[in-house]
Length: 260
Image (cartoon, rainbow, N blue to C red):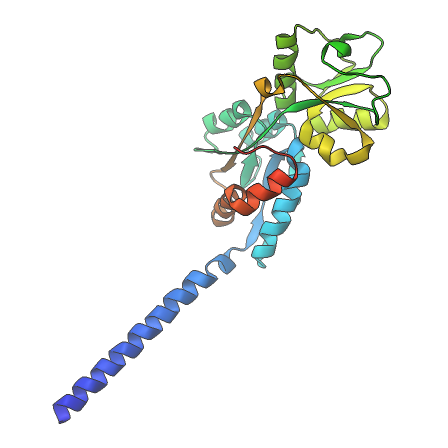
């Protein structure tokens, strides 16, 4: 009887230990996300501003201990140059693969993931008073046309479409990011500008967008990566995963971006 009671007691104790171990494991799994804290620094292409502000807000809401710093938005070439020079950041989202490749080649990142696509439209004043309908119309010398600089993704895409259409422009200026192009059209400083359809959607009634035939021939592909030597590896990896998730992709789709 004594041996039997000892056996039963030992078995009961083992069951309790296993149960506690299971609870501890479950607790670790459920609270591991809560352990993501500190700060997260994101560099992102200017065309991503609305979508990434929303993504950052949702991501930060999942992790009470995490502070996502105000995102640094600019032309992808500008951001790539800063990162190659050693600017401290955790995540980089580019509007093209060529500028991302520069960051990878410099040793600051590896294995970027494609997370979105975008195409160009012509931005004009509300209701299109000058009746601009195509790229060919932009060659009118009486028009003030603004484009992105060639080294910026929207500029490279613009060059591809203009060359394919056989259109030569004499732009009033070449801007370092697409937001600057849109701003000049919105203010009336320019009659037209080549920007992304997502920028036109975000501008609401401030501009009218003119779709372009063959715009898909110059589709911009957006890669994203957690940078090496970042200060918050766990948060950077989690943010990339979130952007690629169904929830993240829904946010991007709501802002007009195409699927990867």
